[in-house]
Length: 56
Image (cartoon, rainbow, N blue to C red):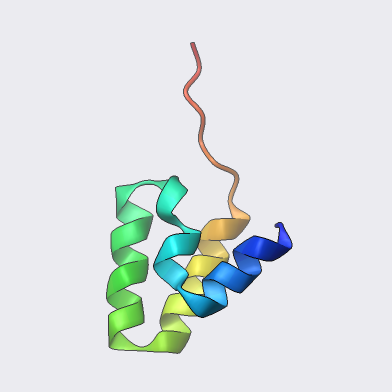
């Protein structure tokens, strides 16, 4: 995982998962509103997964 993802996960967790899709983004946003630490953990977990790319 690149260092900038870790920094984004701590500073603004929803921005760290914005390229992962709507479901991870909404989950991270809700968890960040409910508590900062759960949002950070969720962002770090989703950021560690590779991005799904469309196969042509």
